[in-house]
Picture 1 (cartoon, rainbow, N blue to C red):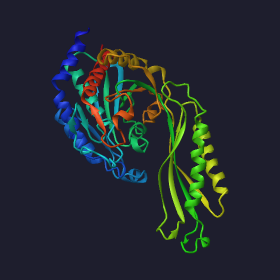
Picture 2 (tube, rainbow, N blue to C red):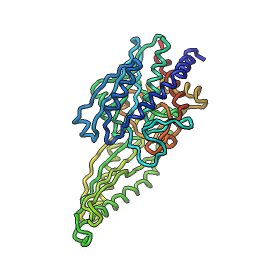
Picture 3 (cartoon, rainbow, N blue to C red):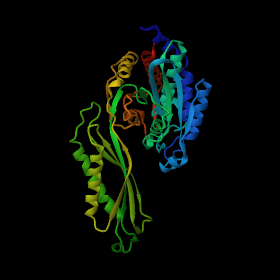
Picture 4 (cartoon, rainbow, N blue to C red):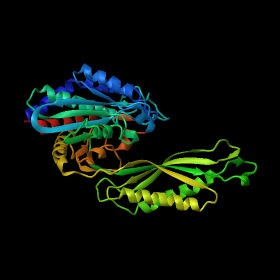
Length: 410
């Protein structure tokens, strides 16, 4: 085995307690989105990085843009590590924003508690873990003192839960990052080269409020919404007949994740608002998908007398398709992943959608790989008791460090 790989592994082992402490400090600063007050976490991260000798450039997204997107504050971080000319610049991107913890936790969601070889807490797996894996992989790489070419950029952003447009999208639009390759936060047992797209919409159903004692004097918006929802849910049976040719991705599907309306139990509801999420496989045309969903809603609404609907698009995230230039990363990650995890690491797609697509749309080849279990379900991401295996964190950091060495060596 290459002696330099063993040196990287040894450095990571020697600094692993420090790495775990770094991740705990990140988990203990909440980044619930919504409400999305994420600038304090970026400030904390920048201070922790500075203590390691890594200067983080801070980019505050203007408040009007942040507020228009439904958040409170965003500061994106860029750490630039340039090496000799003539090589590739690899960006390592992880997001710090997360969904709120919700109920049912048996551990403090902001405690970073360690039990049974795991760290528990919101964002331990998705994706503050890769703030830690990427930072310590770069530190391990530079500890060797070897000549390197190209460069590394650590991109720590705060808008993935709302689509990424004010995170990586904003940095790309402003020309603040222009890498040749991208490695983005993921899990340890697959190299992800493709992912689903996502359409999110807000549907407002208007009726007419009335006293519950004389309901015939009003128009029940909730009854209308139920009819529309049934029509939407019926689409899932049809979607199962549409199969993707990308390994790891099955078929499209639709979910309604939020609904609110009415004013009181003794009032016929005059307005109901719900939000839907339609996942698109890479083979689908996003414009056609949106037109179809809108048609289902309007057709169903037309069958209920007296109601009207407003349909607003919240997000249209395109699918990520593999770009040929990602092969150096794929090959290195698979090679070192198999060596360190003791099993083949397949290259495949995922039904998730991520902000990696924003790089792919600009022709920047990327893959998704980081610290975490085999599946989102195992990680408890977006559920109670989210957790990260510390063994996965250690080994994934070694995989990333070795991969950087392969791609950036002179």
